[in-house]
Length: 250
Length: 287
Image 1 (cartoon, each protein chain N blue to C red):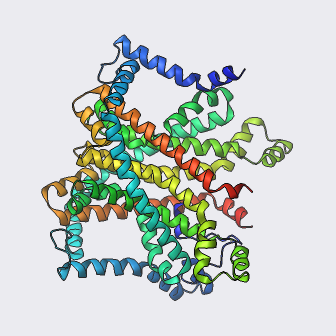
Image 2: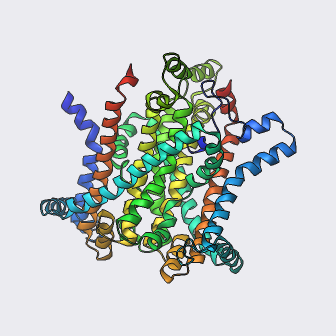
Image 3: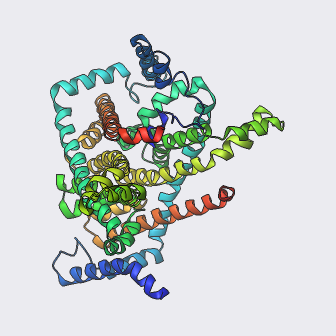
């Protein structure tokens, strides 16, 4: 019964895989359009085994994660500042509103000019792209803190300075995690595209090079690695969230 | 979720909106000077930022080679607008973004509704959707480049694929979460099954569908820009990259600024249309 249900839940994926393999093998489409899934799997396994794909993956994750870390720190600071201070809110609210809707990838050539084509430019653009959604979610979290919590803390003698770390920030954590869940895919998108445009290794670079030289199996291997990275990082974030927010269930 | 920065929610748990927010001032005195003052107060930080930009570059704190002064960039922007170069490229980019988005709305809404209404459709597509969902869609750019070459169709295909999933997922949840009481009342008042769908299910899931579109709109802009940076001979992304490559930085920044303005206006328009269409929903929410 359980096996049947599990099969029923993935049969469409298997069907797509089989059709893919058959169409590719039949010669109806050129090899460089759609290589057989088995060929891609062999290429993928080979590149994992010789370490190239692992290395490029780690490089991309390093860039995306560093940028995201900067964005989380700066975004939390900005969001809390906006929630606590009227002047900060007045100054940054219009700026955040505009910046949120900016397609940050337009800045790739500018960041190449300012910071070169190494790690710095990629990490900083990832940070700039993610910081706004972090700021907005932190702001919403800090604004929506249950006032009774703040009152009780005050009544029990928590000094104003500690109130922030002991009450406001923890109470805003669910919102902060929401912001991170929005920011994570953005960080990957920016990192991949920047690598495609500016080079310097990484999965995006790997993929665009494969496309330029019509190495279809390599292209799909990189694509699957990107899919895997997106999936695994999202899962990790969910796990951490469940760990940190245990108290939320109660 | 993006609009939250500008409009604090009027829920009871939230503190009273600050006097500086437009809503606060508007309710304090809805006379024209009050509103004008509020608008000015909102624009002022951005003006300050631009002035700072001008000051920092004019005093030589930052080299004009690295950041051209704001006034120079503005002059370049005027020139770009006047010569028609920008409009031509902007037209291409918007055609790709909005064309792809329109396709993903049509397909995404139909697919989302079918998945919510039909078990077999859901069983088939649900695993595929959750498999592809975490893929950063710009990773498909090189693939479509191989498939369709450096064409409009390639760009539209990526935009379509990128916008599709948020719309499918939101439509699905919208149809699924239609209040049963609404369905029961409509039935007991004699609405036939087919009319039920058109007159109850679709309107009730509209806020969700719209939310999906709101998410897909900026995604479509991002995707178009990345396609044009990587594989295109025309379009805004290509224009920016071209100016950057040639070292014509004032025009590069002018193009960036103008496109940012377009993206901002597009987002505001989407919000306006959304609140206009869903006025009844907002009222129900507030009561």
